[in-house]
Length: 102
Image (cartoon, rainbow, N blue to C red; front, side, top):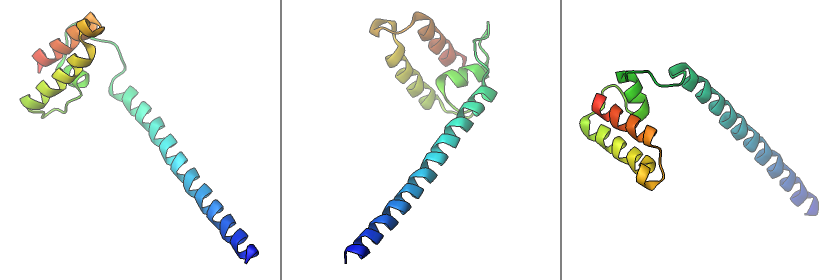
């Protein structure tokens, strides 16, 4: 009985370790791909005059987003970045400019 319990314990340990390693590999590879995709989508920095694409990236909305979702994203970002709450004046200006652009 003791050998059977030890055997079952080792089997469970092996299967658990294998499942964890598979999960870890998936998580790690997706993070890597996400960063690469982010750099391809937007290299960084702001343009002198805001483009529609830049406004969509700032507010994190899709091309066919409706007015209600744009307003909701703007409201959430402004709550997080408002200068009265310790946020940046520059970022608040960019968020407002993105809403006006869209």
